[in-house]
Image (cartoon, rainbow, N blue to C red; front, side, top):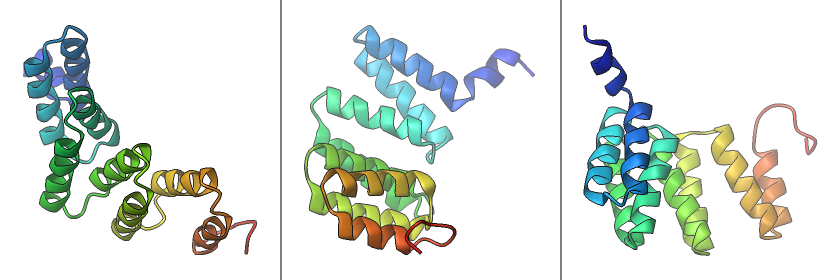
Length: 146
């Protein structure tokens, strides 16, 4: 087997090409690379963040959300597309939508540390202490709130 092909099959290697093409303003090539990376590993959070970054930088925020929603429907077992959508919504100060998306994300991935970390930090940042305590108390395991 060709070692080069083995390396090129990896989503992280492809995402490196994506970054390189994007830095050179080669948006068509960057788009091809990030799509290939998503196809190889549709659940990899960092790649989905890069995908959304592409949409945001090309001023296609809504299209990026729609793309991730479609990916989420195509892979209903994955939580990562929903997490990236929630992060984008929170970044755009669409907190009601972001919170709804985060709750859907937790239904797909209960007790997921990355989701809980983002959700709890957003609740804290927004001063929603009661909601934060309720979220943390609902989690199993050792907690200072139990």
